[in-house]
Length: 440
Image 1 (tube, one colour):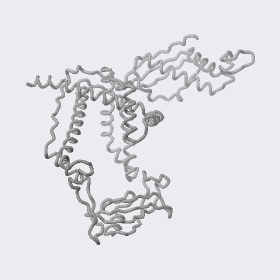
Image 2 (cartoon, rainbow, N blue to C red; image 1 turned 45 degrees about the vertical axis):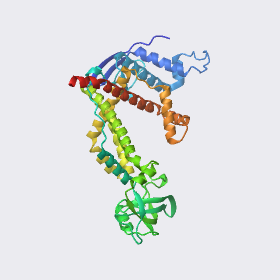
Image 3 (spheres, helix red, strand yellow; image 1 turned 120 degrees about the vertical axis):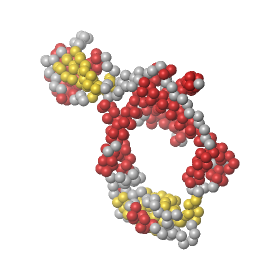
Image 4 (tube, rainbow, N blue to C red; image 1 turned 90 degrees about the vertical axis):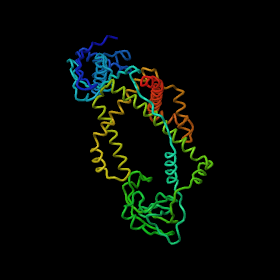
């Protein structure tokens, strides 16, 4: 095969990690590339007078027409852009602002065009001796235990039958069954739903709920108009209106759970409850402290060795987060236009958060590269087994789902992030004695 004629490339930095490449392609390189594409397309064709796959490119051009010419153009641009990036010695993340359809290619003339690329940030790590993060002691006192226990009492609220004749008010709740209806057609139903006067059912207007439910008694049946908003279990009804029929079973008086009830629910002795809570608080505080230490190390590295990211990458990351926020708000019942307006007002915050996430991502990968931290097949298998255990399925099924949905890389990324953060915690522990000695 004849050697392809070389292209010429010059680069210009137009922003952080953002370069413009000017690429010049000689005419003979274009002809060579088109010939190769036509020959590949006609490799299985039998043309009278020629051996299979040996017909001249000129004849193949006549027979195969414009479609192959478009393929040839695509192959040419793809190959020269890739070669241009290689010759520029840039480590490109992606090509941006490039419209191949806008470029006209003449097989008999040289071609000049520009393409923009975003590159990986240049992340430099300081010596670990420069990092000074001091661990904070984890101390759980009696007041914290009591506060957690009181929170648990409120969270495990118990409900007792209200006094006879007591209707629903701000101090009581109702237990009820419900069924949704649209044009007399029954839809989803639920049993033993418990709600208060100030907790309207999703899709029901607050005014309607307060008016119809205030003072309601056991055995009452209440029909309320409702909207089937985004997230409603029957997707065919989303956007429609109907009613929800409530069958009130009882009015109940909520009260905090006793320590004995909490202990019984956890199948432990009531005397053990404070110790168990303290152990739980200690474990949570230790996790929080480890996260603080890792975050502090990452921030110190960025402060000592700052680096920049492509503006377009930050913008794109922020836009994705904003779209997700709008979707969540709409699912909670907010008008989409209002949700978009509210989120747009917070654009600066989303941009700042996106930059923090992306910098952390690249920094963690750079640390993993330097310290030779990798995700093994065994670690992936362990993760699949853990996920399978949580969902009551077998690990093979989980792996298949993750593979088919292209989520294995995301899982691997999460594992690698955990390994790097654990490594940073180890570094903090190693450095702590030296810091204490220096302070002494």
